[in-house]
Image (cartoon, rainbow, N blue to C red):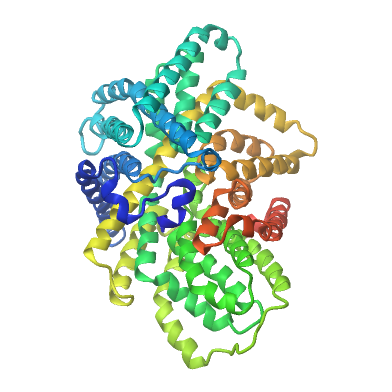
Length: 622
């Protein structure tokens, strides 16, 4: 799953290079602890589900224990992600530099990350000491034991960054970078009285400009938000830095987010067992004989597989190798296949269990069951738009030698695929009906996929299981650290009063609610290009949702619009990082595929405008 993104935003390191990682030996025990915590979380959640629904005796301490383990998993996973270079970052600008300048920019970025951690460590310790005076309600232990995970994670990350500097950077680059950072800090400290008087202009200087500079240097997005927020609060306010730690804790600790690592693990199981390929083979046996049939199979596979994995990268990596050879034989151009793959993945991101929808529900206070139900319908609208365009563009498809699959073959393939096909509908049905929460369903789905994978799809070796647990911990840590630092930045932004000014400005724009929708579409498409979905949601949801509510827009309707807009931005070249992931998965040069994707993005935009203009699409089934 993660290897597909290696060149674009460092989701993963190839397995053959793992022993050369800066802290590989030191981190092995940490990886083992994180894997154990993930198993404990799943075990506790499954125990809670069985106790509640089978024996009607809820175990009240499970949520609290899971919350403790979850925060430790998030912070240890963040450190593992540092070691494995799996934090989400933008390398587009770094690739334009010469090798020598790129090395210096990388070193400067690491020094900035280390400076951020060093600056916040005293505040993290202060936060732990303060929380030691509070006793948890169920387990009756000091809350400080839970939040000490933040301080421990920061220490681990700092140690890994220092080790990385010693191993991969020249002494001269390190010295110059440290001097440059100290000079900038000194200048900002000297001019801080003048900066304080600038008011909301500091938002552009620090929260926008500072984050943009860090992003251009290839600093992971989580640290971009953290560094910008730290500088803003330090040099323009008198706010104690312990507030940043508190906001990070709040951003990472919602119980709703417990389903994130579980669904990430589900995607790993999907890859390892071949359940996704079984679905692809079944659809190909049904539709492969009609004109544009392989396009329909690709889109339908992304639609169904997304309901299992919750990961765009996993979706594309599962579908492309199974379908691209036959599509090439029928005369599809590689650039057309990449365009369809990328936009199909964008379409499928509203299909449950979408991690983006789970985070949005947590941050904006929107029912996840309603989001899952609506997301399924919205994906169908976008699927139809893409399918119509695919049929038009496939009018010259070579159907020579293509035959309809026999009923016996279709039946055989359907028998193999049925257990895999049940899973996405199990997830959607359970959450949408209110029978179980997204977190509960995620654990049930993992158990189901694991057992079915062993019984029907060949099983998974113990070594592979451990590797999946560690990969899940790293990916989850990278996601949750983004949510934590983005929550801190969103809080800092709202404290300036800027949110209220923006609300007043947007509320009085001519054209009413639909103009606001168009502005939101433009904003989230732009942010989707640069930040992907999760950071943009955490940053802007506290600002934009109160405005949409004041204008009478239903929360679910607005959610579908902004999530779709972000997905379009994610796949829009030349910046959208999802587009480059699709090119990597399909082994096609981005320059070759760039021209072909625009008609498909246009189809998605038309679908998005229809969704924005007609609330019925979003609200009819909730």
